Amino acid sequence: MVAGLCRSLRDGVLDRCVDVFPCLADPARRSNLVLRAALVVLHLIYAGILFLFDDDLIEKTKKEPWYTALYLLLWIATLVQYFLTAGSSPGYVIDAMRAVNQRNVTYRKAPLASKQPASSKNGSLLVAVEGGSGTNSQGSNATSWAKLVMDMYPPGTSVRNFTCSYCHVEQPPRTKHCHDCDRCVLQFDHHCVWIGTCIGQGNHCRFWWYICEETALGLWTAIFYVTYLQANITRAWWKDVIMIVLLIFLSILIIFLLLLLLFHSYLVLTNQTTYELVRRRRISYLRGVPERVYPFSKGVCRNLYNFCCFRTNIYTFEPLPTPLELEEKLRPYTFLDVLKCRCC
Ligand SMILES: [Zn+2]
Ligand SMILES: [Zn+2]
Image (cartoon, rainbow, N blue to C red; front, side):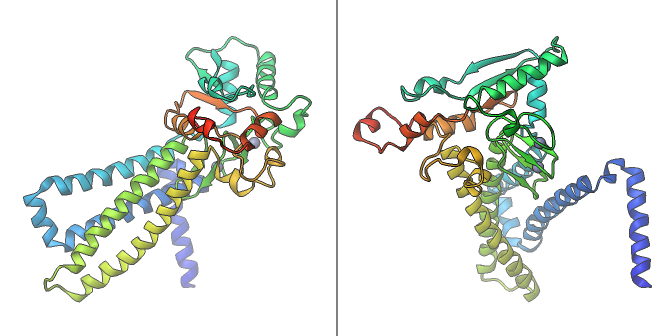
């Protein structure tokens, strides 16, 4: 009976909330909002308890306000970065297709093509989306997108092999359909439950910066907690218990974040995605590629440059490497390669 009452009360509150905020009617959006609120609350708890319990920190802040100000700045920057990442587009294929078809677009080979080995014929294809509405008819639109995608696959590849069975759009290489977002994502990395969106070409850089800031904030907070617990002053025992429990939970989070940061840094340096690394043997375009070859890598420096200087109004499409290019990548390094900056 009590359970029934609670359920009807919960349903009543939920209905009321949906009336006031219609966006809450969608369960996926609702869970995203709950997660985001939980993240903000978690940050507030860690910083709030610190300032509430630690009198030394208050005293130190009065003497050296810049130290606490820097910490609070990082705290705010981390939350801002989280919301920026959550609100950014991961690079949906449907948007890229519209951009290509309905707007004035310019195509050009990425400058990296000139840095590729002599045998290399392909490079990234940058599609810069400019303002203004398109004049193309729908028929020619579909053709232009299909042709653009087809050119990125080896000749003779059937269109059916790279057409999404859910969205019915032609997928450029490195694209995957996300069942949570119900859309195809360019350079799909993973669907992040914590962020509430996919991580792909459009927001991978923001995501990396978010985990970097979150790790730094976690470490700095842990230092504050340890300093508090080590201070030789009399205080209530329950304050110590709360601080120790929070510190243990924070330590687990920091280890997880550090590993995640290292993992994503490795992906960035080798121009891979989590999906490609985990499902390497199942992905058709990676079948037959030797284990130690990163087929889309352009060298550490160029990979870093492309990752950091990614612009949201430009879509980058990477054609599949030819067998000759893969062979070139497999060739062991020589002293001459180092001199020629083969990796760069
Ligand atoms: Zn799809
Ligand atoms: Zn997704």
